[in-house]
Length: 108
Length: 196
Image (cartoon, rainbow over all chains, first blue to last red; front, side, top):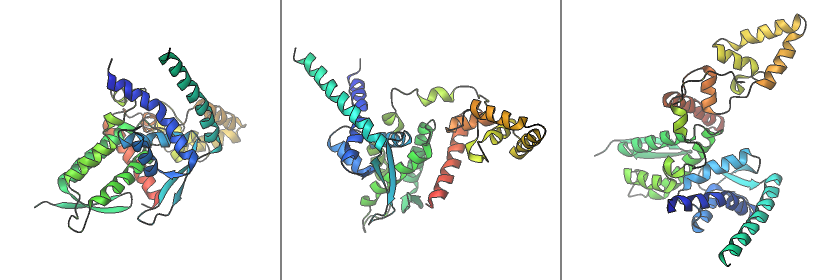
């Protein structure tokens, strides 16, 4: 058993959920999302985010639009689709269940 | 004294030291290979390029106008090497590279007129898709069989989505060299479409 590997697996599982949660508050561009994920210590390397965003977009959970930026080229702003919101509601529920289950076992 | 090069990253122009350039190029090539199996690999790569540009910009001042090897190494540690990024749950891309070249028929979405059936068959047999289309048109006029066959093939044949599938469609072995060429072609198309 490799501790670092186990930790990385745990983080990976919740990363998708965290991205959707961040986007449920407002539309963001990738660097905003990265900043939040880094502050919350959910990601270690930034490169992890980009394939996930593209996969979620391809799955219809996210959409994006190009927005002019005061400094430099236009930025890609992501937002949740209707499907993404429903998906997130399901994940919210299952997250609460998970926390409850783990707490139940840990406090026994 | 060092030679510098000028590169375009996500719409920004950067002067970059020669050694820093080779390191950055190597890094981007590795990422290309890593994401070659993804459906939208070129999109992921252009997103990452934009991010690199964003990380480079604050490193430049009026006293330091060139991107150095340290800047590149710093960006690589922030973004992560393909090994750092790789998802453990996915099969490693390396397994695919060692497999022999499959030759499978796919629908070719890049050169399609209707559903990509004829362009896919053309790519499979290495002939002009217009010859295949002509055969279908003739078969349709001689009793309407062409339409039926077309519909069946449309349902049966999968669409070539990933870079590896597009290479398999042409019957070339799926190896690093081919994937590299193919990804580069796709990358250039996306660039052109986005006017970057």
